[in-house]
Image 1 (cartoon, rainbow, N blue to C red):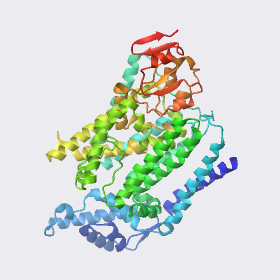
Image 2 (cartoon, rainbow, N blue to C red):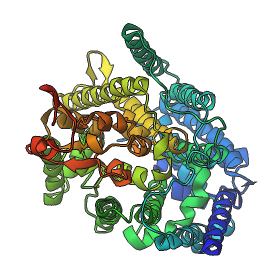
Image 3 (tube, helix red, strand yellow):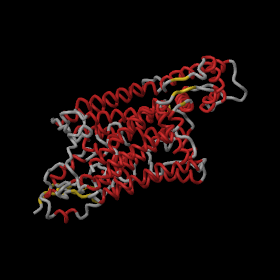
Length: 599
């Protein structure tokens, strides 16, 4: 069994190294054919071919995507200036200036497609071979490493998670460095992303400073310093490397996909088989996302095979990711029908009420109208009603793709969530701030859609939603939300950033029957529940007092109950019989009515 696991681990490491190396195997040569395939606008295409010929770029070979990208950017700028100059002399008859001129917003798409079409080498020539050599080999290695775990005795093992260099976590200094450097880097890049505008990055920085000041003020008023979550004496260096790799992956995926064309070319055959078209960076991401949840989902089954609730829940997140998030949307694309992840709910799906999405759905006939109505019903009816009966767990732990990745890929890092009181205060301010931002941004979008205006109180609606998409939809949800798994735990996004989690949490906190009940008389204060809580809840504090856990942040994953050796914790959808159940086994019962002693 040990040999099989070591073999699997070795294969996975080899596959990961090969996967990374494929980004440097191809060369890039710009030709008229590749430009024709990349540039759809005939005026832009004609000008770019002329400029490329004049600059001697046609037929020139580049050894990396970085060299090619730099040269192509200069080509785009030269073509843009030339078109602008020609537009001053008069536009072609019947052509608007925005159809003729080349807007800067087109640079990213043109660069990505041109890089992909200009790629030549072993990866672009043999995509399916490299797909199996890298992604396929990684799956095989992962499965070989995981399967022997089914032969182990069921139950949670104290397997030195705080000593393993992959799962130990970071010392406070390193954790602060990664968080600070990432935030500063994203805000600085945000200036470039917003076309050299400092306004929105500056506003975001001021809001962050304001929240920090509020939290510190509250702590000073309380006249106590909250205990920090335990930080290791030695930083987990493998976890640091894993986090850096994930952060780098998301930066390339979201903002410079031309540098991962090798990976995208590898999944082209899979894309053509499913939707009939070429792969984009989003197809690559969706495929990898789904495969990771499946493989790591099997690992979840081995770890929690003693608990039926965890087994069913893991199969649920695997099913919804494969069927609703991946296969059904791709099949709809192949059938030339409107495509949408039917389980994605506003405000997590923040583009749902954007004008282009509403117009697309309305113009798509009966299916599009159904999708529009379905999305609205989910927000207005399903969320409050289902959450009232079952808490936010019905979505966050059973259906959501973000939660599915956190529960599978992120499970080895769940113990790294900060349990301090200060982290809880940050959590409440930040996540509800993101929800408020999402509501305001959506309100502005709908107002401009129905009124025809472009601005609301002098703020441009497109600019506001562009910044939201950058700082929340990309930077927070991806770079920090997933990249920080090995650094700060697996639910950073769900805990601090997800606006839908905030919406569900408000319903759960004030209008839900769900709670985790505790049998205080049986608690031995082992701390397993708090250690394994991915949402940073100090469950042991509640269990020691016999107090039910009713927290807006709790996603009802049930792992605290699964790892409890005494059966102290139980997930409930009602507290109607709580007095009868606890009359004998509890010493103290804490409720809104007060603390009562049980004989």
